[in-house]
Length: 370
Image 1 (cartoon, rainbow, N blue to C red):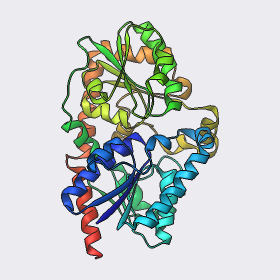
Image 2 (image 1 turned 120 degrees about the vertical axis):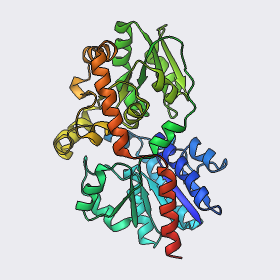
Image 3 (image 1 turned 30 degrees about the horizontal axis):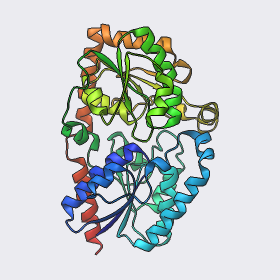
Image 4 (image 1 turned 45 degrees about the vertical axis):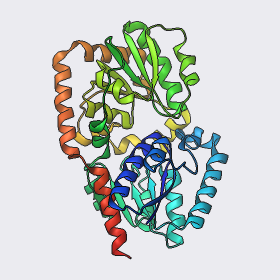
């Protein structure tokens, strides 16, 4: 069968690559075409993405406005290519601003849509649930707390575990540095890095420890070097994110997939998040994001409690990040309590094999309609 996958970010590329491997195992005749990245290309046997996700990754409303032309071009190219290639199923992966438009397009043309990694409508934009209900044939979710949420919205979602467990557990770890160090994961987009790095570098100066920065695949070294400057205690590494997390004494992490990866690797962390004035205004005043959810980190949401601290918007300051990092380093009881919560997060997510299980469910569902 022919599978058309669409991933618009680094995390989607990771999950898409593991899903492709699962689909190839379940369907030896599988053919793939996709928007994505290098990981998906490797999983598909070297097939290049039609468009690389680096050309479409955005953060916030101001970034969307700045890249509106290229995003519309990608959308047109995707629609045209889907019609030309005639897939058996289109599999949007997260990235809802783009992918829900594709789901609507496909639905109108009678193409089957299996949406993988649901839009986080439990956080904001609940109106998207009606679009999911109308345009998506099957929704595949990766967090257990989403089961009841989508059921209450009248959407029968499929949960088969979280694919990050397989990604973390299958990695072959190599220590990246002999010294003790702090990890910094400043996000996967330029906007995130621009806001995270100045604060993190001030913390690095005041902490006096070795700092390893995990470079995002969609961002060039030059984007980081402008913030790092001549600091001797700071080193930037690409392609070593899991290694950097695994052996760090503590991690300063931009909210997102990386915070859950830190929990699964057992790395004490503080999560930070800030955005531009326009996005913050829309979030607080229009979408009212923080009226809907207690936490911004996936691990904390899974537990429904604060397993690790979140420093959001005005609370994201060098002073507060430094204070929390020092506590992670010096307070053994605090660290042990966090690690105990990590164990519970992993238990709630379930065991391994999620990508293969999702692939099997997709293939079985397609075969039922042949």
